[in-house]
Amino acid sequence: MHQIQTIKEFVVEEFMPDVPARELDAELDLLEHGVIDSLGLLKVIAWLEDRYGINTDDVDLAPESFKSVAAIDAFLTHASRHRTET
Image (tube, rainbow, N blue to C red; front, top):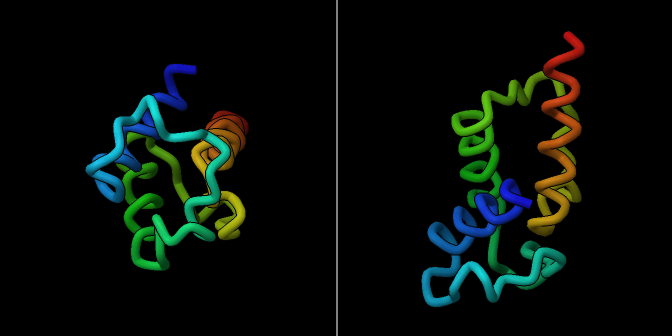
């Protein structure tokens, strides 16, 4: 749960400064609602690499993996697991 809160705080700080993190629904489609665009996706990916040490060269970067806070959380869990296996 802590990870989801951290992701929410990043999304709000970078893309939705007028929305409190606690009000951001983890299932909100950030792409469909125009919160994150293609450049925003690059920013999210770079943040995940820096914050969590994810090597994105080793994982699938499908846009669906970043469409919501919950999807980013699932991606991060998968990528972290992949990192420990290599």
